[in-house]
Length: 98
Ligand SMILES: [Zn+2]
Image (cartoon, rainbow, N blue to C red; front, side):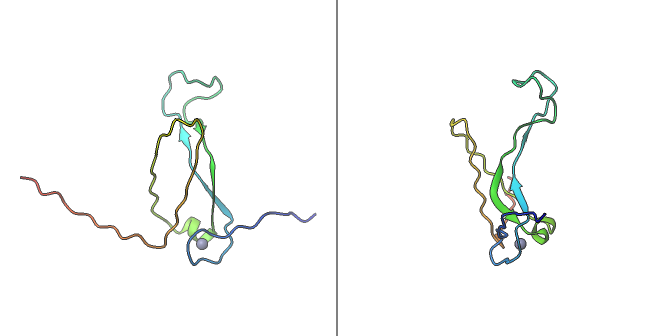
């Protein structure tokens, strides 16, 4: 029986390979004290939504820099935005100490 699956493009600009791997983010419980969910304990995820963002095998396994920007909004829901780039110019400057 043929398996049907929706195909996605890799989100990396210029990449034409299939995006066979989905990005997501997870918030794990990192303590052993009581939690609001009785069946969850240490290392369980409070939430782990997937993004509408897919990577080809090469980009998924090739290494990357991830930058997370957490913006609390009191909406009781989660929205994930993924912005993919091929290069990001970074510059670090040492702070001069007196
Ligand atoms: Zn790719």
